[in-house]
Amino acid sequence: MGMRMGEWFDRELGGRRVWLFFVFATFAYVLPLILVDYSYIDDSWRSLAAGMGWAGEGRLFTQLFYNAMTFSGAAPDIFPLPLLMASLAMAWALTRLTFHYVAEPRLSHCLVVLALWYNPFFLQNLSYQYDGPAMVLSLVAVIFAITFRSGSRVQQWVVPALLIALAIGLYQVSINVFFGLCCLELLRGANERLPWPEWYPLIGWKLAQTGLAWLIYGATAYAYMSPDRTLLLNWAADPLLQAETNAGRALEKVMLLFHGGLAWVFAGLLLCAAAGSVQVGRRLLERQETGQRNAMTGVLCLLIVPATVLLVPGVALLFRDFNEGARTLMGFAVLMLLLFYLSHLALAAVHERLPLLLLIPLLAMLSLSFAYGRVLMVQKTFASSALYALSYDIASRPALRDAKRIYMSVTYSDHWLLGAAGSFKQMPVLRYLLNTDYYMLAENLPKVGITNVVAERERRNATRVGYQGFVPLVDSQYYRIYLLGDYGFIVMKEPAPITELHW
Image (cartoon, rainbow, N blue to C red; front, side, top):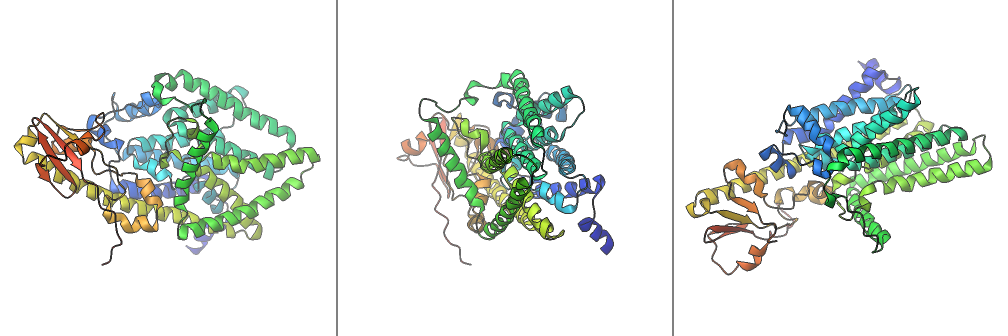
């Protein structure tokens, strides 16, 4: 057994062992989400109506994916089957990427590539039981686009372009990951002393593939997108300032990750990456090229770092309706991959086993995944109790049960989930990942037979202001229910701030 364990650490791993490692690692990361089985935000209405609606978001291929998976024209709930299949596909893609980077990989090389999957912000993407698997497949398509190689020039151009178009049609934000992996390709070329004439086709192929991919996407999924989804920044009102503001908001959210022990882990990773970048710089100086070409290569490598950082929010910065949710920060995966790659260079130069220290940040991310799974469990328990309490109050009163319509006000707050207060304090990023700052969604009530409750959208919480003078029919801990004629109004109470708990 000891010798077999030594083989994993010291010897080159074959394709089968690399694939088995990634199967285990990918499933470990999604296991908490599978165990909790929580319907997250959009999952509620999709599972209720077997609804789709992805084509209008420019994600036609997500819709087709669920049509194929369910053998229907809709999207019945079949979780966790799509996530299991997508995880297997990701293990395959990570295996391909590992052998793309290293011909004879060791375990430490697998750890570097695994950083692409252990993106902490991707946990929010995976929380969506419907959208999550499609987002995983978009990453898989991007990875295969990077790793595809063919002797045919036509295939080398068309196949990656089709894969990129497929990725965008599954989830547009995945283009950030493709651009980030292209940046890493350039950095690898510099570290491996790629001759200057080979840089032109390397960059040219990526530009040609991207251009064709956008044409394919424009002729397919983009044609179904609703116009309000395509609004870019207002070019008449200082677009650079708008993009800078959006970038600042994204940076503020990313900084939530660097807290407590995680801050020390990433500080160590950053120091190792800095040492690795120095090593790349030395190899640039050793290149048998003219001083001008070496300088241009050096400038290009220096630009890769800020470009990868900018790709964390990426193309989302260009849209007028900037979404600062964690699910849009897919580019952080490539930033982690870059840090791991540079750290591996530095650690391997000292001792061949030192790169195994990369297990520490990966274990930190895995720990965060399980912590997030427990927070989701607390949220599921709270949501279930809220659902049964509200449904009982409505079903037990004939006047409410028979009301033509009951409007539910929307009250957002960070103080609903008391049971996770300790976790939120120690890991602030968990609150950002959870992103459920409401008491109840109206579409949850049909699950328990209540069908006359709707979310108050166009009224924009008019009930909270306009009906406070009336006597509520129900006055509970979290809400009041008013009845005026045949119409009811559920008004949420502002929850008290979560204070320090002492037991």
